[in-house]
Image (tube, rainbow, N blue to C red):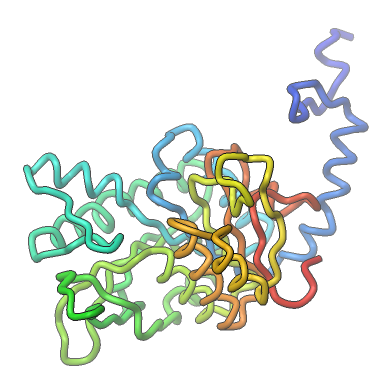
Length: 309
């Protein structure tokens, strides 16, 4: 027998060392309880614009989602696309303008947002999922009235066509999940009754509210940070588990600060709406979604209610 035929299953550990059959089978056995735990459950994944920049990692994410779907976990993928929107605005010579962290969205910018999110990125992601053997359908928040929104009005500042979600109508998502289809959702929304305008919606917030409407078991934000760090300059200071009631203290102490605050606030929206587990994980880590779903150690930060196990 050839040496390379002596191992039916070959993989590597975190240090690149080969795993033999016994070690590899042990990995699968350890993962088995998690397979059983999540089959039939809804998991909403928000895929961040900055976490989508590396093409190889993007393919890894698609493979993870197809695998979850294949074993019977109902994955709903909600995506952003800020970097791609910036790139298109640059191409047409229009400046990207932000006010208090929100993209100022005039009429022309709204057209670009719709074109990039629903016309390009959404279909690109669907295409990647199909290429990896999945069955996916692209939606926007406008389709079937999935998302309704009202214009954001904060302290009298005009943000243009930037909205906040007021209503989620998840029936179209549920019908797709029942046929084992992966819904891929871009977050533009139609105005409330009597308002025919379209609005640019923060994808993190929209994903959290979709998770609540679907009574999801997990809400996962795939982003470009390791999670919540005690010290932002030390990646080894990751806080792996945070009870929901501890979040206000972490914000007050400054441990949760800057761009991490809106991510944690979205977790809180989901938790308060009945989603028991929320996660902020690093989309730059290959197969981080599988590591979170199927291992005891997990990756990133879990913010939870009740028992974290």
